[in-house]
Image 1 (tube, rainbow over the protein chains, first blue to last red):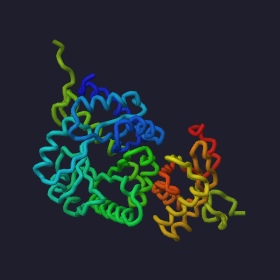
Image 2: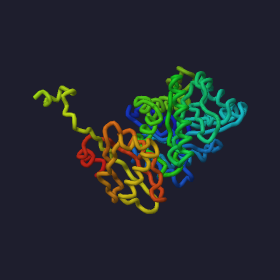
Image 3: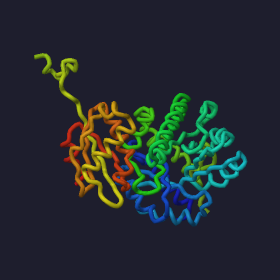
Image 4: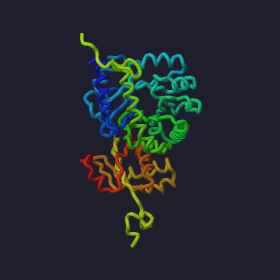
Length: 255
Length: 120
């Protein structure tokens, strides 16, 4: 099955996802042998969709191999591909986006400079922006006011760090979230798990968001409807029926 | 006997504490955490995240720990249930061994958690 066929068939399954479905936007397995185990664990924990972060330079063959590894978990678990890029300059961000957008279902930008954050916040090809806990750059009022993408909160550093690093991470994430909520930005949450023991359940992720100052309904949306609607829109664009916003091929003439 | 009426919340008996029970899945790598170690880890995590006042507000108590299935049930006050879930989530090590504690379900009755079909 080709890439387009795969994306079109799974697209219809996502349309049928129940409203209470939970999505973990990102896992980053340390090696490929962990992928299947982490998918199985995600089903146990109660997720119905999982974002698998792959190397942005992965070839279509490598992506197809990974997709076939997890194909037998459907329809219990919908696995989608995600790319995370961390450019330092505006020009390299634009180049990377043009390379990854047509291949991955979700594209996230790790903002390491203000120049990149300002462009990534506005660019329609970006799905989510995230601000790393170990960096100096934070979500500013200027970025929040122009941002049209999701603010992604990755909880892996908060869960796995200890002591002073954890306290700093908690403080920075709560400041980012306060800024984003004040500006009315949508928020998404991801575990960013590297192995089985770093994966967390939907209840666990929402309770951490609550501790960071996010309300119950926003926390539920951050793992559910917001991400699902974004994913559906991206899959619609990747399908070969799509022409532009609001225009799609209804039927192709048979030759 | 107005206080017997369930429709009048103001007339509820004063001394009764409302509690919640949280069922959590415990996964580990290496040595399995004992009940005492898990209790200590929960206490330490709540104190680190929310302080002593938070610990008093949550009032956690490990009421059941099935080491075979890796399922723990923790009781807390009903206001402290979110804090307890967050603190359980933040546990990543118990006595040096890598552990994850994932809150899975919250209920007002322990019977509900024990009789849950998903555990069987």
